[in-house]
Image (cartoon, rainbow, N blue to C red; front, side):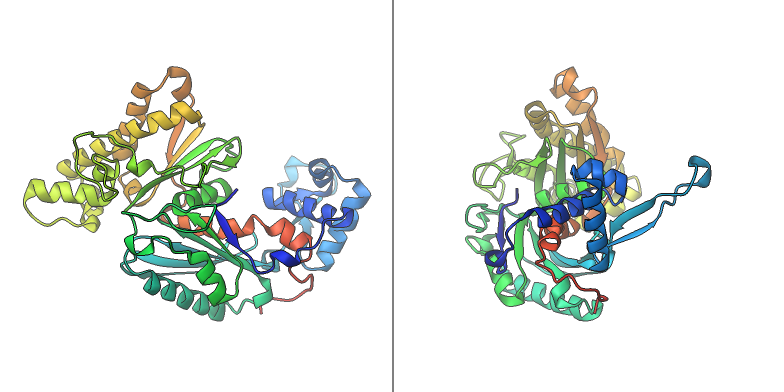
Length: 411
């Protein structure tokens, strides 16, 4: 499902037998739905009631799940409240990294995705892979020390990065986007330096993963996530499966041409969406119009003040995004479009022109039930999605015993 993984434990994976399969199924059900009764586990897993009981007992004894009384109000039930089974949050941990054009950010989450540590370093990343990876290792080392998480409880490291990722090789297709990273394999580098199984994903794909697991796209099987930041990209899920394309490079929405005679883009084309709808493009247009410097940080402040010129430029950007999305909606027929990244702070000034353009640019049957909403996770979508990439492997890693099944705290 995801571009690439570097996992030194892969060769030692335990073969699946019927006993292990039962554990994996129960843990998968609890990963998908945080709290389930034993009866619900029977229905969702297809296992016999006695098998579910045995597996729950074993996982509870190992400190991987817990049982507690249903917290539903007493007026909504009769008789004794059922015992609800849930994952034990401290059973395992994941580390997520988000490498953007201007920052490196790290997060530590428990097994249910709750953040336990979150820190970022501002830096120019595009031409400095060594410095960015050094910062990543520094953040990871500090995170482990600060949280005192036992090393054996860390399932792995997820790395989201703001450029295309070749899923066949793990190399970055960063030409014109992050010039210093062309051909590099940061997952291999970080795995060697940290000793952690490392998975690599494009930042927009990390965003859609996070929104489906924690945010605005929960329970949505057909969703497009658009990240409007220094770079513009889309993560796409169709019938519950992430669409990556032949090499894993699908979703480069920022390099869809929306103005054939527009400005030259850093990718070498002319009139790409990034040249009109990124925060830098908006700031640049305002600076040229006003004859004075305008930075990307100024755009958010101008929007808060209701500056008419800034609102107009943002509305134009929303229309441009809508034009690019019209083709995506026509091809994929999503039920939901989630807009994330820095520019979403503009709110309805951005979203309503986008919706209006989508209505004009698609068949009625495609847009009548389509929702376009802001991200529920804000600027944390990328880093939380990188951690979620690791958490997707919880059922197999814990169910097959790749993480020691022993009680103990976080360290």
